[in-house]
Length: 281
Image (tube, rainbow, N blue to C red; front, side, top):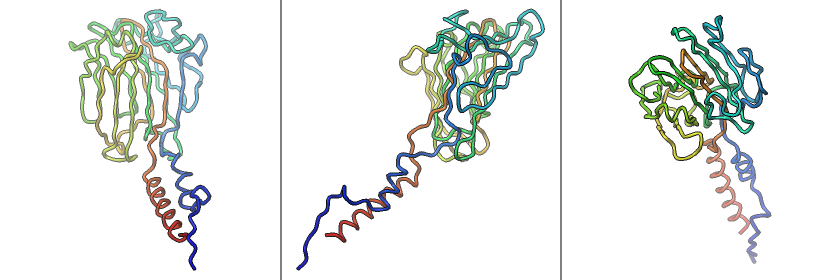
């Protein structure tokens, strides 16, 4: 006589299910997650800043024409001083001035990303975000630029006739339609990268939103060759502008994108569970 036994699933855990569940909460990413904000630096910040925050590499600051009465330099902007509009929760922002007026004053500030478990420092299934504003870029002179690795740059050119930030990608130059008024009020910028790492067609989405909140002012998606172009650093450039420039809140966050192998394991686990139930029926 065969006795039919229907056990509660919660009492049995097939090895494939255990392994799938253990990995299903994980995800693949390249650069280490990271965060830093101006308020981590107190009230002063020089051209040789400490490396505060977490997850980022060292700062690199390159200054040109800072040998006269203060033409080029850095400081911590506090309480919306000098037109700053992107203060963090501590009331601060990183600030630069490069207003020599003769076309040769500039400051470049870079922060390297660090490698995650994949041993790559480029973004992968991750979002890098930062805040940006300006107290004056032109007219007739100046360049304010931010770069993510050598793959993407966002620039406002004071010498141009078009009042718009320009997005440069490995394959195109795009007019975002985001003008100086929005830049002066403060912007939140994010770049999300996903897809196969070191691929000729890795996916990206770049979004520009008001710092104060609300709907995006600009968003575009596409692919880029991540085997030839990297997203492993952040660079801020202030060159011969008429007003001070500001940036803040550097963050690398992971997106909840499971690895393809996770789906395979989950499928194997379901199949194993089905087989287990048939054997015990």
